[in-house]
Image (spheres, rainbow, N blue to C red):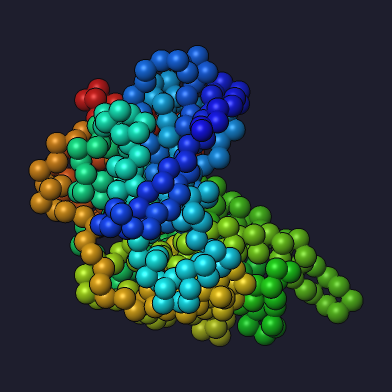
Amino acid sequence: MSLSYRQPGVVLTDHRFTVPLDHADPGGETIELYAREAVASDKAGQDLPWLVYLQGGPGFGANRFVGRQAWLDRALKEYRVLLLDQRGTGRSTPATRQTLPLRGGPAAQADYLTRFRADSIVRDCEAIRPRLTGGAPWTVLGQSFGGFCTVSYLSLAPEGVHTALVTGGLPSLHAHADDVYRAAYPRIERKVTAHYARYPQDVERARRIADHLLTHDVVLPNGYRFTVEAFQSLGLMLGASDGSHRLHHLLEDAFVRTPAGLELADAFQEQVQALLSYAAHPLYALVHETIYGQDARPTAWAAERVRAEFPQFDAAKALAGDGLVLFTGETVHPWMFDADPALRPLRETAELLAARTDWGPLYDPARLAANEVPAAAAVYHDDMYVDTAHSLETAAAIRGLRPWVTNEYEHDGLRAGAPRVLDRLLALVRDEV
């Protein structure tokens, strides 16, 4: 039985659905999905069109809004919204170090996780859509990886989509993971350089922290081994609208003077472990590179291998001269499965996924070229996480898709720019601009 309750300005209803683990075997094992329906309080009894929201990630549950926050307020003016926890996330049969051993050993876990990509998420949506809409197609709003899923939706089941809206998430239809990261590292370097131009005092601060980590064995309070590579990965913050400012505030309070000399402050370590830990979203680390697997080539820790092509990211070499300590971001590396207590038990599972060569296609270029679903996409010109050139190439390959290219927002534009971003996309698909 679905349970309904209220928050300011909104009526919420919890939904649970049972779907096949493998949609190619509908009579086989099943998993449970969770989704939260949201409708404006003054429209709760109306017959409204549905909008399903697909969260970024992979590996993150849907937003837990309070009332009508961010873009949800705009959506609730005309839609009944479904905030879906994609399989393996949130309350939808979560996949973690605690739950995955129920599957068996690493090989069984890796086999299980091959069914947690965009194609399975699309099939989940199609399984639950008729139960909510009576069979009518719905609007799909995909943020980041949710946009990847939306492009898969248009490839696999366009009949289920009334309108497709994508924010910061048009994937390359063909690029291997190597190509994705080969394009990513120069983008990340530009973001770091821009950060240092804004906060030049952070150049020396980052060097001091990196030097400390190269000469000390630091373990954070939660057991995370805090290496210089882990420190550099904090550059993930630079892809958000306020990320440069948050990174600056983090760096300025790194050290405290003690009887034993300068040490990394407890408050700094507490913040860092919250930023680095994958305890709340281990699926991100496990399947991140698999979202680019579409052929017989393994992903094989693409981000780690490709990083070697960019020696300027070597912190030790930077410290040996006068180079900048470059941050990284949006990359997953094998050392993370040694450093993070939430990932250590899953190291072998991750290795097996990295070695797989049986990935199926996620997109259908021919079907996308014949697309008839109204579609629009926000492409953030300076996006650190998704390559703009790849996104524009895909935008041109999807018939009828109208891109909005802007440098007004970063990758989190749907949050930072709400409701303007959603307004703009809806205006584009309705030919109002």
